[in-house]
Every structure is written in structure tokens, then in C-alpha cells.
Length: 154
Image 1 (cartoon, rainbow, N blue to C red):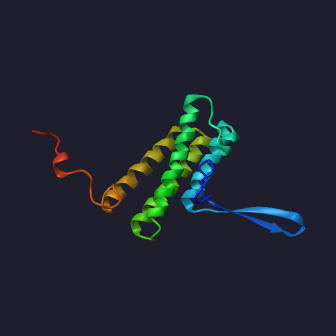
Image 2: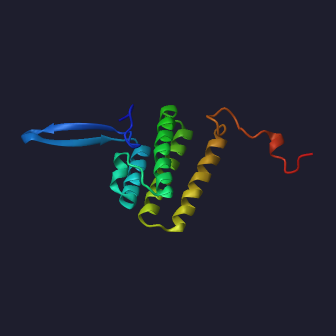
Image 3: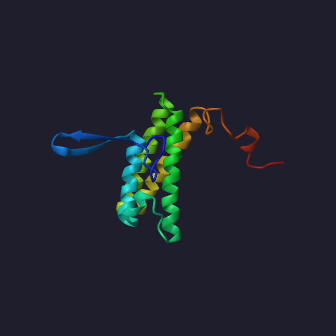
């Protein structure tokens, strides 16, 4: 499922044939893939297991959340393809992504607004880390020009 995702799942799936006709599925995931999948499984527990097979819920809010999870999976895929190195920036960002998805999974399982505060804190820290490592646009520099930082434009 690396090249052709299925409902947002992108991990490598290996079907192992064992003795006596027993088969086992082994999933090989990166940390962001694992965190995303666990959060999506929690969402499926809440909204219905059929979202795992591409079904979109009927109500508008649930449909939007499921579609955003699919987009998030695509974003993680793009992120992983551009950050396959072991640089400090990619390690910080990967840890932040994983922490964020784990907090989202916790929130889905037990809606507690303090968990959302933690998600926002992680996202803000990640943005600051990326900017300190060379900007928010792929390390090509800070996208905010000095003249845009001024409070009063004359």
C-alpha cells in the first residue's frame, strides 16, 4: 500500500503463509504511519468501521473529518518522501507528527479538551522548529519577509 494507498493506509502489508494453512498479515509501518493508523482506528471505532474501507459517513461533519484524515495520510506520505534522512530537523518534525497523532487518537477515544490544547502546543512547537531549521517551505528560508513583520505599515 506504499504506492496505492487504501483509505489512507500506506504501510507495507506482508501476507505470510504459515504451516497448516494459516496466514498472518504483517504490517511494516513508519512511526508516522503507525500513529496515523492508530488514530484512524480510533476514529473508525467512533464513526463506524466502514470508513476503513473507503466509506464516507453521511453527516457533513463526520465526512469532513474522514476526508481530512485521508488528506493527512497523503501529507505524511509527502513528508516521508522528502525527509528520509536522519537530520535533526526531520527527527524533530517526525516526533512532533507522531506525538500529535497519538494525542488526536487519545482525544478521539476520550474527548477531553485538555488533549486538544496539547495537540495545538505540539503543532506550534513543530512550526517553530521548522522555521528555526530554515523556514516553513522545505528549508528554503523564512517565508515571512522582514517588512511583513512590522506592526504598522506606512
